[in-house]
Image (cartoon, rainbow, N blue to C red):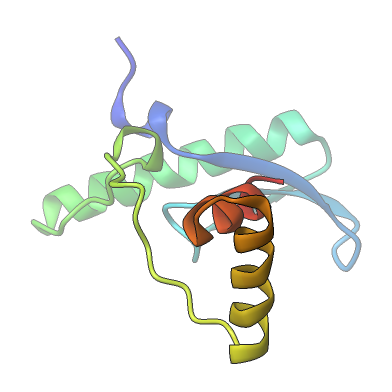
Length: 109
């Protein structure tokens, strides 16, 4: 069975500044791991996350929930400039759909 550290959102990307691959974890934005290969960067960030989780457990701190296991309502508020709001409302009316449908379609592209 997968442990909590296996459920986190990991990403490996190239760091031009460091000239190495950097391993990142979305749930722990302050952590990173530099390595010569993508595989080593992933292994390193996973090890760093495991270490931080252990420290947090020993200090009775709240451990971040993996994004993959969170439940989302599908609702969030976005503030946009009035001219964009007007433009979207016009597009929705012209297409015979709700403003929510237009915004959702645009966000999913």
